Image (cartoon, rainbow, N blue to C red):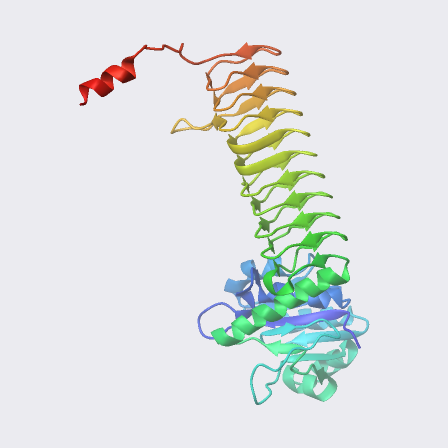
Amino acid sequence: MEPVGAIVFLPREGNGPSLMLEDLLFDPAARWLAGTLSAQGVARFFVVCHADDRERAVPCFPEGTEFVTTDTEGAVTKLSAFLDGVEGPVAVVTRPVVLLPAGQMALRMHNPPRETGLFTLEASALAAALEEGAELEAALRAHGAQTPEGRAIPLTADLGDRAGLENVVKSISTGRLAAEGVRVIDPFNTYVGPQVRVGAGTVLLPGTILRGETVIGADCEIGPNSMITSCKIGDRVTVNASQLLESTVEEGAKIGPFAYIRPHCRVGREVKVGDFVELKNSSIGSGTKISHLTYVGDSDVGSGVNFGCGTVTVNYDGTAKFRTTIGDRAFIGCNTNLVAPVRVGEGAYTAAGSTITDDVPADSLAIARSIQVNKKQWAAKRRRRSR
């Protein structure tokens, strides 16, 4: 009897927030619970929490969830109205708990067994009992079935329990991805949050950490030792030993090793972002190659651009930040400093070692370095003086 609605209480212990709002891995326990219930078919949620916890609780549940707080007037009437709108079973969660997917069981974490505080019963039966004046706990025990410990695991403040539960929720996520056609090479060394989505055919190598609202396409290779937070990753992308934050990477791109993509970046199709490259608040056009030892910040880069090793977009003057614009098919020589605001035109070149402070016209070569002077025998004379 899988529920179609859920009533979730987020009780407090003492003066602190509910245990359900503390993180397991990277997300609050309430988000893990809501995800499992949604996967079972729960479409409507009714959440009861402390007024001070509401702001943190709202993002944990699907859009459309109805919230009441401990100081809400007419809370019982609102609960009755919710039950009247549910046709079928309802899950009622009265205590902090982590719920495993159907068919998955965990070993009991302590002896003797503890009550889970998670009941399933017909919404109409609960509504009738409450209308007759029954207390909620009594109605649940009279008309509902309590989910056994092993599938519903009580959440406590004990750090030993918390570590065990983090292993449990880690297995929930990796198991979910495996069932959806994702190859997880080492489930014991892969960490995936409850909101993460990964396409079929993608391989997750050991040390992969996927957090937040990350969406990864099909046939990618992620890892080893990579962390991706709230990013959108296209199909056939490779991310090797790198970190990506709040950015978009389009299909066929290759990231890393040891790349760092900071928030608000868009990396185009078939782009190469190589070792020790940092991007920040920048858009990179398709086919561009940034192979190594380069910083691109606050920049708009066209397609087919080549960055030489050691390029820096100099975007900050100590007070304000400025943007750099680079046109399609430009060639940026090694150790070029592009002092923003500056524009490099389409097809233009910058000579290696240049510091570019003025715009470069399309199809031009910019040379901005001092003339080389060779002083013959200077080194030999210096050595003779030092004897």
